Length: 97
Image 1 (cartoon, rainbow, N blue to C red):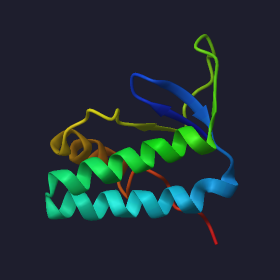
Image 2: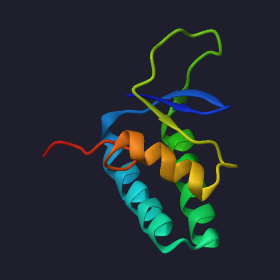
Image 3: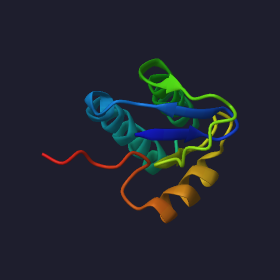
């Protein structure tokens, strides 16, 4: 799966890591619901950090379409909420069982 982190580029992340990314996405949703800025910052940072840890960066000149787009680390709670409205169920899609 190719994930774009806004302002940072694309990362190819294997399906083996999607469950962990979904857990971090759930934590981000909890932080958004609470409105706690510190919790939100921590959760967003952990999610983006995991994408970078598990993912392989694609070349800047790569023209691969992104499967999903994630906000940058400086995104506000309101910006992420707006992004979620367009995405539906979190930032990371669910993994079929």
